[in-house]
Amino acid sequence: MSRFLIGTWNFLKLLYYTTVSDIRQSDGNALRGLLKEVMQTIVLVAMFYVMINVLGMRGIVVRGNFILFLMSGIFLFMSHNKAVLKIAGSGGATNPMLKHAPVSTLLVIISAALSSLYIQIFSMGIVLLIAHTLIEPIVFYNFKGFMFCFFVAWISGISIGLLFLALSPFAPTIIGLVTTLYRRANMIFSGKMVLASTLPGFILPMFAWNPLFHSIDQARGYTFINYNPRVTDINYPIILTFVFLIIGMMLEHWTRKYVSESWSKRQ
Image 1 (cartoon, rainbow, N blue to C red):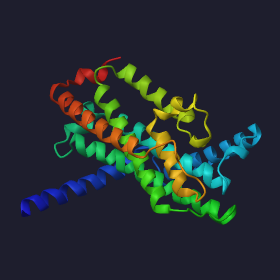
Image 2: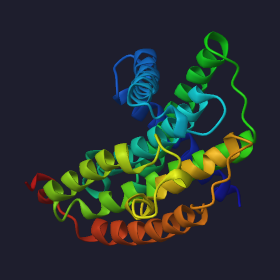
Image 3: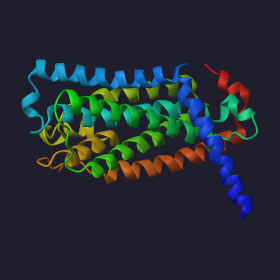
């Protein structure tokens, strides 16, 4: 039992240092890197605020705090997309960090996921504080429900990123392109700018395949008291996440057994 506890403590300690190292990789200065993430979120909110007003789409959004409507979609969008990018780019079986004995593939993947979560929660807190103090009071109808959807968006991004990571040694160029296309498609098909319930029936299937679309729409049901997300289901991204996690872990485990260093040099 004591050996198990010592092993667990050593793993958690190594995970902490690996996560901190992963956070600092985005920028040499940790504070500057965090501020850059905050600015990305602020710029997205401002850009979509102007776009919706210019296009005259403000009347079709949910009644309530318009800034909160934008932020509720952008927070989940950033959490999901950043998790996909972090996990898919963590290197997996071809990561040179794995040459060091204490480091394992599981450790690298978990540290990438936690660093992404830390950065997004920090930036979300700062943006909410700025909006609450400088623009107008921010009130969530059910903040616990919103955060549940936030974590669903994050972990579904992890599962999709893990699938891309496990497949990348076989065709790194193609999988890299698919990863980029998926992240770009989320700019439109995540539903962060529209309400799912207002979409026409012939357009809805173009969005319904996306687990992030369901997470964002369900989050808005917890954010606003007068919105009922009736065309989406939170169980869809949860089930898809478990399926992708299992497939991704099995495929990554198989790849790790047969991988060679030359795989990482393929073009």
